[in-house]
Image (cartoon, rainbow, N blue to C red; front, side, top):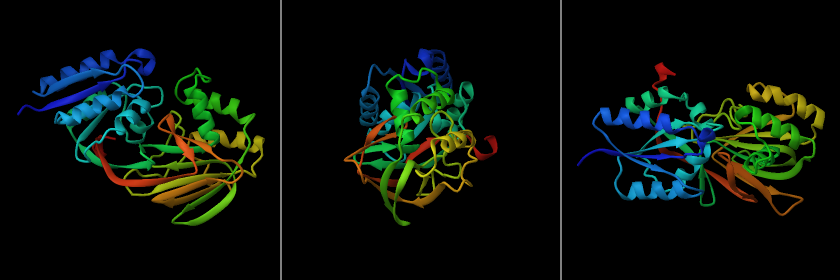
Length: 299
């Protein structure tokens, strides 16, 4: 039986410019004797259906050309944990690829052709899975602003701009958080439940997070911090230098229950998409995804 890979591409990713990269990837795979089944997604949820169809057809692997949102859609399909997944990062954020050391452009194609795979943990909230960071509080509000078109700039610049706009009107939220560490009840600016190190187009919210250790790094920013102090903390967060700050608390746990104290619900975001609402329980799925990454010596 011939070896055929499914290539699921989002034509809107990266301001609608992934086609040249996709064509180069198809040519590269075909030059090695592999077959390629290329499909372009046409709207929300379509990438999930395409991934479902690829799995049902017995595909040898799936390549995702797009950003974190496209990856998120594919993750909602029932992917076998040993099915190789390749990434062609061409979105506005590309946080999963960045965390795994996968560069943009033709170097991403080289990673796929090399075929070096590693198992990656995934988070789960209800029936939805996520790969990077689940956000609650200020960072979820920022992600919502970007998702609804209130932050026109891409990547980190868009995240910073949306944060500045959102911070001015955002108020801390009292939450109850329970995990292997016990129960914490406090006012918070944000709670970032991290499988990987960054979100928001490169913001290193959890610089020590490892996507294969079976644990979330839960980063909590104390709500007692003033608006002005929170603003001065932002530049440190961009480079992962915020953890020594006394208002930052980090806990490590394979599961986390988040409960709002003063409101019925709090929106949750992950991978640049709406994940659900708290109260919710986030659980780690160790080794749930096999992903093609650079070899350690190549990173």
